[in-house]
Image 1: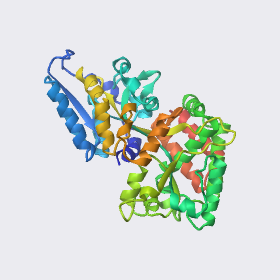
Image 2: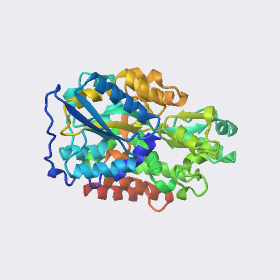
Image 3: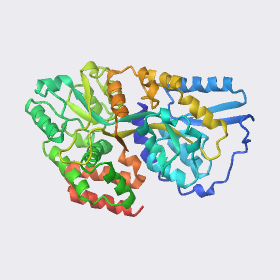
Image 4: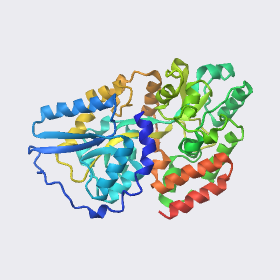
Length: 430
């Protein structure tokens, strides 16, 4: 699943990305004349079906309509893309159009002068996109990338197991969630599947709890002040400890991976747990990881992360991420027009129809076929705020420390008070 792989692969991108950019200066020799012959070098990571032929067809159509433009596509597997982009950016020569997840890595690329400020170029049409989807690509009020896919994290649950346990309604508050976990355990069912070995799934819990307790402003302020040692962050850890204390996870969860045959997704897909907190890719990965290769089908449901009593945040503020494109500093003039074409309603509908993309263009939402994806899309459309994954939103070292610290909290080796000090120490050294 593209979104899943994309999210995870980001963490390795940043380390070597920013430092050598000042070597830049190998400019593109092509003319600034939009009618002059030009080539757009486009790197994307949809290197398999269903999106590989979709992107190729869109590029071909564009070339046919613009005979002076050639689109040179390099579809790359995630890890290969990561390596190749790092090499290109170290040389100061980013591609003209390339995969981006926004957030901390994009900020580093901006600081290094590697990507274009496209605010004015996209102003006539950026309003057709879901506002929350653009936020990860907006820095200091300027737009540096455009998302073509967006999603959110929420609870995916097994309707049959909830029914067997007597849980008749999706938990709307944290207290109700803890109550549901108790009922599910009492029915002899594992409440939650968790890939403890991979760390990033657990960071979803703490991040959402911070959002619900302190509001989005708490996370924004921490990014600015480099200080996570505040009562709201400590309280989030304390609430997560309440859940951990109920022993809600499957046996040996600390050694479990996400996508392995006995991992988190397989546990859900095989009916071995009642719920998981995961992104919009969960149904597809559950199915592919399950013994039947079909997953839970219509037994699968979705509900947003609950609110926390007394918290400043609301359940309409969502946490997630997606995929998009940034424009390299030396991109030829046709690049922005080609990017606009990719985001046209008709093309977004083609992408959405594959089931691999949740479209960012509002008018393309009618092409979403899967019932659960429709729920996710409607939640995003109604969202009152958006927070990018913390291991992408903050500088990579901070994001990694968040993941490490939450893993320690869940494993019981660190307290809520200790982890915020550890994260703050790393943040202040950035």
